[in-house]
Image (cartoon, rainbow, N blue to C red):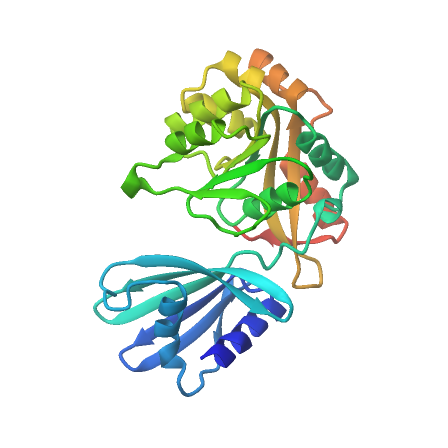
Length: 321
């Protein structure tokens, strides 16, 4: 099983697949990979029907109880690289389906090649040098927010960094990582309270999902910490509006927010590699929008950056989301 899993992972990495799907219909096994947001079938070998139980074992799932959905994570060392993998399993009346997500295959990028635009790279360098404040990364599911987030964190040196995630997507011994566990009443709000007692320099919050978390994140940023988080929003301005919808007072938001980036993930022209196109605004833009409801002509909307990249043959026309 180890040899077969290595072969599948090598195939997935070579094609920049994000997920490997394992579906067992009675005794018939189907393996598929998500490549460039499309599902591609993989040729089956004898014994592949045992892969699901093997992945359950690696993920520390309850092998004897497949009737309830389960999710687990593990690391896998292959070809000199450690992969962070998450396995999710669900059982229906007619099939068993498992999805193995490759969480950090794209993390060979660094801050200097995070974007093809120098202005974006300089913006991110400026954000992570701030001693305090809230920096938000927004975009839809599958837009590469986690990759951007960890690329920024990995570029920071000589700082005490705590992460609070649900779940922890990419394990790293460079940070102190806390996984949310509602069964023991460890939600985002309680985790933030605990982290603040440990003298952090930087706090990374995996995602702002509700009013309590939004307010706690702003409070942490306004008490002298650099806080980096993600949120589902369509644009930088949409990010501001979303935070206000979650009950954050406009004055507190103005004091806390130091910058916002909004992003979409595209396929590079002529290759299977991926590229993120960004829209960014800094604290000056944030104050201007909050006070007057508009931004000046220096603001470059996301769609304009996408159109420019497409016109210059840098990206394909269709985004991943």
